[in-house]
Amino acid sequence: MRTESCREWRTSLGAYALGQLPAEERAGLEAHLEGCAECRAEAESLRSLGKLMARADPARIVEPAPRPPAHLRERVETTIGAERASERRSRRRRRFGFALGGFATAAAAAVLALVVFGGGGATPPEQQVAFTNLPKGVEIDATLQPHAFGTEIRMYVGGIRSGTLCRVFLRGDDGRLYPAGSFRYRWGNDAEAILSSALDLSRTRAIGVHAGNRTFVAPVGPGGATASVPQLNEEEPT
Amino acid sequence: MSTFTRERDVREAYAAHSGELYGFAVRSLGDAGLAEEAVQETFVRAWRAGERFDPEIGSLRTWLFAILRNVVIDLGRARAARPGVAEGGIEPTVEPFEEALAAWQIEEAMRRIGEDHRRVIFETYYRGRPYAEVAAELGVPEGTVKSRVYYGLRALRVVLEEMGYED
Ligand SMILES: [Zn+2]
Image (cartoon, rainbow over all chains, first blue to last red; front, side, top):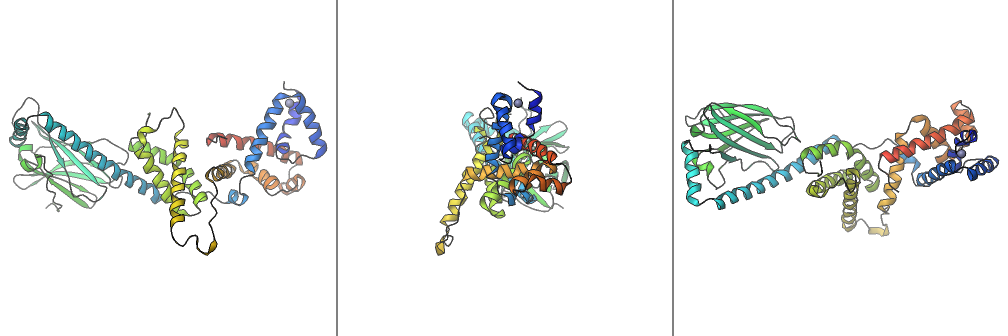
């Protein structure tokens, strides 16, 4: 039960718990504690806190807390980005292997033919493009889908510096570059960027992305649609 | 969110806990470079084990500190195995992890409480100075020092609870 005397004694509990209370005051407080469960519980709690406090190194209390250097965050993100990229690669291999196993070889060949000639099947054929030979930790892949307006591009980028501006282009069978829009890579955002170009997928021979000061290009078309790993060329666009 | 599987989870966890993990790693390993290595390895292991994180069982912070514990032990082993460290009969003393963690938590909590509270606890408890002397130095009555010690301890207790201290 809390009484007037509780209020008087309460503020002595800190000094009491730390063993700092003069003898006569301590005797008075202990008399109160005997009859007051509430103050007794508080004294007990503070006393165990006092035991914990004894473990601290006073010199370290007055030192400022060390802060992680700014580059550590980047290191962690880059390392996990690389892990994530290899996970995605193996997941995609599994998925693709499953697709090949699920269709007859002839059916798979038919799908490829649709991609190459841009034919009007019941479901518009997609083409997956994997960028290979990328710097360690970097991953780029794209899915191209033909539409009446041209080509829809869904692109995933990982493992590059957060905030990097990525400008995407397609190269047509005429050798010209067709801009396909841009996006900014944000670390921690797992979404794919959705872009589009007026160039027909059937006329697209390569897809590329300028990311920062680097350019990555992967071939698109008959060669790029096969199960074999597409050849990557890194080149500066004209 | 029930697991630790998205880059966003890592980013949020890093923002919330990297300071504490790093601060403790520095204290425990006594070396900023090793501490960086330990924090990085902790997040990488957490990422790999992400699907096993269950917030029903314990907080993210507790889980990360448990991973850091293993990392620190592994780094300590690697360091001990490195030739030259134990030469000359000098064995590096390694504080047991739980001891170090308890000590670090109270040091960190002391740094986080208000200046008025920290000052009186530091002077009277850690430096063992009489209340009268501290009161004179601060220009306040002795009773004020006494009550600041009490409310300082309460603040310390709250901070420790916020930090997830479990004894
Ligand atoms: Zn009472």
